[in-house]
Length: 528
Image (cartoon, rainbow, N blue to C red; front, side, top):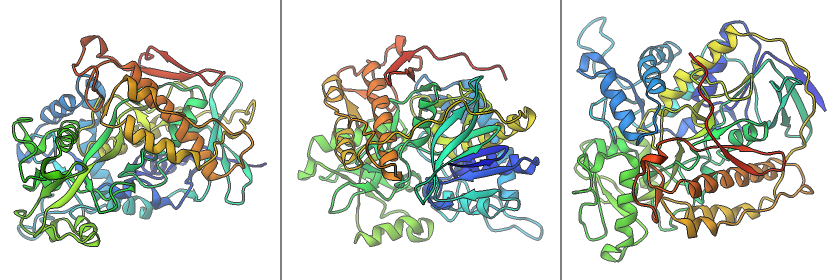
């Protein structure tokens, strides 16, 4: 086994991980970023929506953004965390722009005027506060800027993180990794930052890229960390539906399209969101996704697997949404003349590895930032375009805590053996998750999900390790969903349709030494 030493190892190269890595490196720490694929292969580049950030000059306020965030979170958003992210996000975006990110702006009014940032509205927001880049390519621009910024730390691409190693005190002191050659190595570090993104590949259809195999949650859980809110899987209301149906990674049709005036209609041409919610087509994602699902079940016009987005009245569609236009064109749809076929698909995990406001998990020196983390910002349902904002703020906060609290390298007490599952078995699990643990689930459907057994004899490979991670986190999602006997936010129990006051609390889970999932109370946050 090969062995390397750094101050900080960051697993993942999305906005949160890159921000943490840049800040730690700028403070003089030796940082290495581990990615199992190319650095630009993660979820950040696929974020069509923008960054929700307040500009007081427009009449918007921090309180208004906070209110929208808390309402979307359906009673589980931590208001202290939300206030910190929304407030600090303004300066964090300014620092991102200083690193080279370019956002869409109005034409300058004269010499010396850079032009105000263009701002739009998305679902759940009551103000135009969403900034974009390239119309619908915000994530790609954020990622480009961070990868190209001065002081970019070293990247170890093509290396899959396997497990966190801990010292005699139980503190994280590095990670094991699988090299492209198949050799397992150890990277020792004073701090480990998980920034691995989400769990899209738990489902047969998702907006997430193939790398989103829930690695970070699985790694943290096996290390003994606490996770929470995994039952709240957000389904994006509108991914592109093609003749082949929904399978694999699907192109997003951003909420910004509805923000520009597009409306949802069913197979009979009737509006889907009329009378469903005061914000109609700009209602929060869970509301829109459920409304679409229910309308499809009614089979209007003989169509039961998708609805349509009518964007024909959106002026300058191709100019405003070039990425979406390209995806539609490839599918044989002209969005300026035809209805766009859309359906919900898995999009975002609202929960994850429990952290405090510094990104600290329940394992000392192990941090989690970005979608892999459960900070309490999103609660039961994420407000649109709060994810990139959270990644920026929490990446900065984690780096600051690491810099302020340096520790010497610990000595690993043991190197865990990689967990593996036979990869072909995962396909059936993904289809089962989409069918039985989707937008609407009940006790019967949840009990029907069958999980592949671990296969210790399987060859240790990226595919077999990812299959093990998918299987473990699918167990988490099903267990949490079966435990929460109510409907709240992105979690809809068809057999328990009402929200219950007794469930206005997170469900936390840990992994026992016998690989059993244990439900427990959430630990109190570390005072900030």
